[in-house]
Image (cartoon, rainbow, N blue to C red; front, side):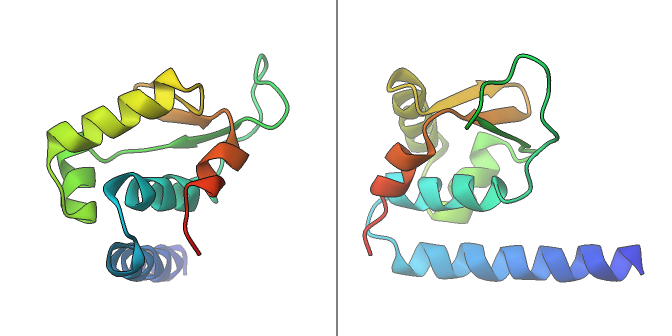
Length: 110
């Protein structure tokens, strides 16, 4: 049963990623959509995490993220660096934390 649930989840994620690529206007917007999608599966609240911060695990490399959004690894690196510089996102290994969800959501055109 767990395997079937995981496969279903993986298929839904893949569908959403493909849909996101086709509907987004810019690479940063595509990356924001992925980040927000991944944040739907947050890690349990840990000591030291501030209210409103959302931590989640990302097991993809920047190269794999680039392939998902149809760009280069270098562009993904630049976009993530910009998000970190603005204080929207923190990346520590495979644990990513959204620090300002509203700012990320405001990047998405509707």
